[in-house]
Image 1: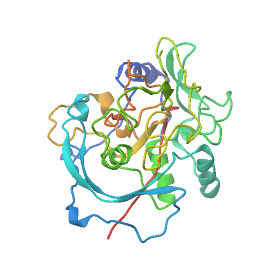
Image 2: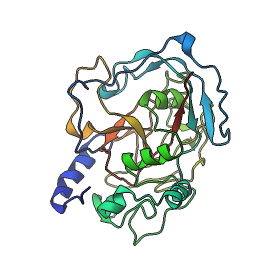
Image 3: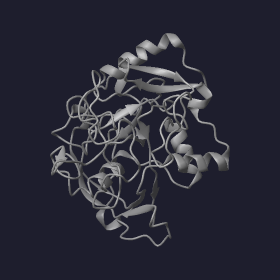
Amino acid sequence: MYKIKINKIFVFIYILIFSSCIEFSNNKVFSSKEKFYKVENIHERDIILNTIEPYETNEMVFVRGGKFNFGSNNGLDREKPESEVVIQSFLIDKNLVSVEDFKNFVSQTNYTTEAEVFGNAIVYIDSVSMWQLVDGATWEYPLGDFKSPAPKNHPVTQVSWNDALEYCKYYNKTLPSEVQWEYAASERGQKKNQLYYWGSDFMLNNKYMCNTWASGYPDSIGFQDGFKYTSPIGYFESNSLGIFDMAGNVWEWCYNWHLPYEGNLQKFNVELEGRAQRGGSFLCNPNYCHGFRLSARSATSPESSLFHVGFRCVKNITN
């Protein structure tokens, strides 16, 4: 591992600001055969209708597999093409991994995150409208160790993809694929004809449905939902499956690389290379980053830690 050098910061910040959904990547290695994100379809007769393995129903949701339209022909180029797939059943965390959850993991394993090894992590400094590598920024102090610690009931941030995967593996879980994430977020595909799981309007009955900046970035900030940064886990309404924070709050790491979907011949720019992320964050706004749409995707390099990126886990089910 290495500490990112200062002379790389300005290139890094430039890419973050001018990519469409605040994305960044470096140090990605693909096989020469990896040109597309290939979706593994199963036969509908092979769908597991229920799970006999016991699980904590207050922590996870059983998502019965089925057929749905993955991707979107009406979204950004990176979300195309839309294709019908059949997905296997799986279990997914109801909630994002919290600061308290991650603290318990660290206490049990003595795990050291990559941000702690590097000595810094990425924060948007709104007072100067700049992204910066902040010394001392970690999962405990996501804005820097000179700021207040992260509330224990908020989603953990400043964890890299590598950190998130280690957490999942410790609990015999893994990170969701983009197909699993989109299937669960869209309520088993039933809401794919709309922008968000609650409908196609940003607000519902004059009520904010997720934690996002209503206006602002990068010139000013308008957070009218009550939260400038992260919000408590479960503060906003869940979708009909009982899964919380599938829109806004923090981008969520997914397992797969962010590649064009099979059949999409475009070549992604370097800022779109990395491990995939879904869900958008508190920074998002329809005017510049519509990341909390059901089909929206982003990416960051697997060793990067950011103050608006977290994760949840899934458990795959097999016959």
